[in-house]
Length: 217
Image (tube, rainbow, N blue to C red; front, side):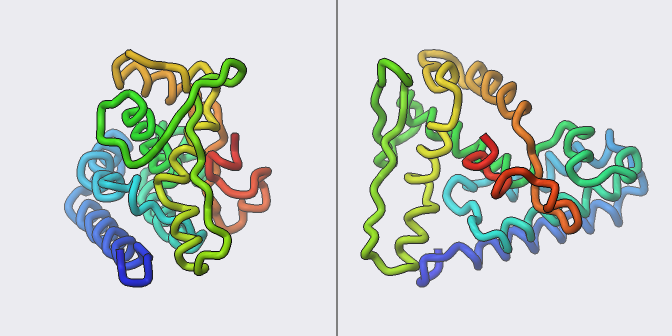
């Protein structure tokens, strides 16, 4: 985090690293087949986007679109799906958008906190007889400076609980089970939610305000 409470410098570094690795893959491998390029992305490139993304995940449309553009360009080079638009390519390749993956990781980490698997970052929860297990959403001080307020609104301790509370009750209530079991139920649900990152020429087709699960669910 920089001295202005922004992760922009880190996001720029991640963007440049992913762009560099993608270029290296296309220069090194002649194949443009999905069974070659997809594993190369998931094993060599994707970890740079995933690592600690619960903390630094971008919230501005500009930064989100910059990262989504990396995956959009990469998948456009895969010959089996080259004729499809980005939304259709994600479905055909069984891949999530960058933003969807990051939000998925935030949800999983919240669940790990509630299950005492990882240290708690001041996230509180309670059990409602009607709605099941829910997280408390920290209050934002409205009188705080704009930069501080914005950073707080999009921090993991606020957005993580918001995302978790959006899940169906049956998934939120999963407890005393393996991480694999929780991920399986979560992924089945997420696959039913439209994953429509903003794309020039197609954004007008989106029914939701953004591609975030906060607006798509």
